[in-house]
Image (cartoon, rainbow, N blue to C red; front, side, top):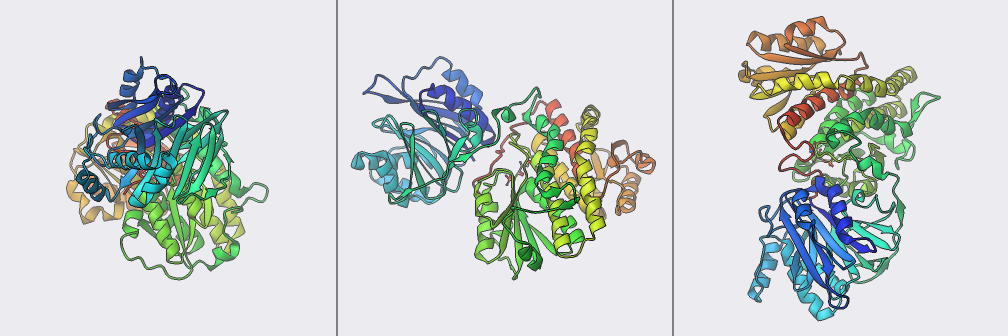
Length: 613
Ligand code: M6R
């Protein structure tokens, strides 16, 4: 849940590390720090600079700092053990050994007791400092950082990605992991170790992904990878296809706003590999599962967290209707800790933008252990979930940097639509003309999304009204229900306003009691089979003095008549409506949060990639 960077090379390590941390700040932003070698050759020592708060605070402190060494590490933190403060910020350094850590050492109390009993004193409240103590002791025995890492690994339990340096080996970095991601960029006479390729891409597009229980040994500009115990492993060098420009704001005030506007392209890219344009059919080539396997499926579980989970809820509606396969949706942190029953011929679909969410990864592993066939829908290629699933479909959204997920959500909805069509078609549940109709709607979708986004300013004006309310009740029926859930989540995480997502049919069963003129009802009510019922719910709310903002199709006079504000979407197929309706709910949350002066890209207390429980 933190961002880590390590560097060895001919460039200024301070610039490379801070530049990399800037790209990783989405992972955590309560404190940051660097440890870089300094001093004359032969007598170099580690100089550490750390600061509480966002990376900008560290940058201020580093402005006039110069380092003579070529080796360093850096970290941007999302606190787990110990409050956000300078003393808890990484890197943690003990007698010439410095390290940065992403994750949680679960047996830290045992380690701390043992260390304290043998005289160690601590300068922070973190679990990470304890690993620095263990390493500094071990390196005294072994005289070599790689051997020291190998020696302490059996002592560590939990999830971690760690990069360590030792001032006695001024051209060596050792990185090791269990859980959180680690990727290593191989540039021209330089090596960059990071939590994510975004910190690497402006230097090189050649990368090696480190797997759990592997140890990466960087000496000079060379990389070697070992198992615990010292066996050498041959790793594949992969080429990243993203460009550095994709991780810039391109004139937008926030990444989130840019990413909302990138959604038509994201949806087109998500669909492109799977649509045969000439035949107007869906083909799921290269997903790693066969038609025979798809035909055998009797039940599907969709498992994910947060926004990805809400995309999964939408998937349930479309898969059940189009492919006639029963679907259960589950929150990953619930699935993994109950006793799920997975009947034979079950497909478990895990959805994760980052591909690293700890609960979703654990759920995937559990499902595999229980014999389910697994399919991942991820954005980040070669992420843990992507690699571990039996089959994979990509969101293809490009890098998503805003902590609040937007384009990954709509890309997932698009992918799930195509998946349901393919499943329906191979199982003989979907007629060719119906498939053609859905494909045509999917192909027309990016242009319709552009049209909705051209009303950005209008959604911004509507958003200003949200500030007057003490809360917002988002509601919808059918496939609009997950959009209500997602709209409420966006408002919570960005505007810090209380909001709830409800199935509109549930209104009478409790939420109606909330309704007064300080509670806004936001009804997602496109013209589909649920329209009449949603309209009746609005009448009931209005009769009780409720204030209503609705999202509907075209120029809907009846809906307008019961609404204080009305936001219009183009006429579209029912499967496409949720993708269109996602845009105004995202923009409402974005604009109100921006007007409130909130940090839209990095909302308080959150981090993008939740690699710890
Ligand atoms: O990377 P994932 O899709 O697995 O992440 C899941 C959630 O943590 C994520 O969707 C979270 O809810 C976002 N902040 C929502 O905007």
